[in-house]
Image 1 (tube, helix red, strand yellow):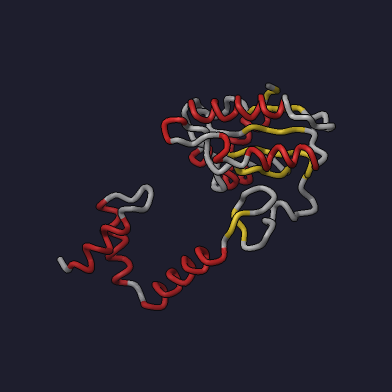
Image 2: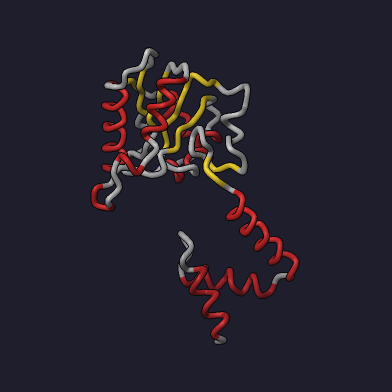
Length: 200
């Protein structure tokens, strides 16, 4: 096999969820498709890498200073749902059960990976609590050990924050199985998790 093909297969294997067989299938698909389609794909990837940034208000991906959710006038700006990654927004939005704003932490507290609270956007959350009129904060971190550690840390920080706002703190309900990730949950499960969230 030509080295250039082996190199392409190897690079594709670095993508999440792509094993050797899938990398080979993608490689041969790209080789057999038109140059126009491949160029469009490359341009889309390059444009995204060059132009997408983090929303200054919530940490979501956007091409502007603020994302389309934060600037949407019909969103309930008194609700903030705390999630770990921008990809978690997709499932929550698809559930059709949430119409508030988000705060994307950028990960979870994980001592084994040397990720602490200062590596996340917790200070941005505390700032929004001070400046925005918040009625409820929903903690929707993953239901694994690190996600629970992060949720408890945030709950304690919010409880001790010197805010004039009186808001409740809730955690998504057990519609999600323990140890699972939000990005892999279906819309019905996520909808139930939001419907049956509990105060913590």
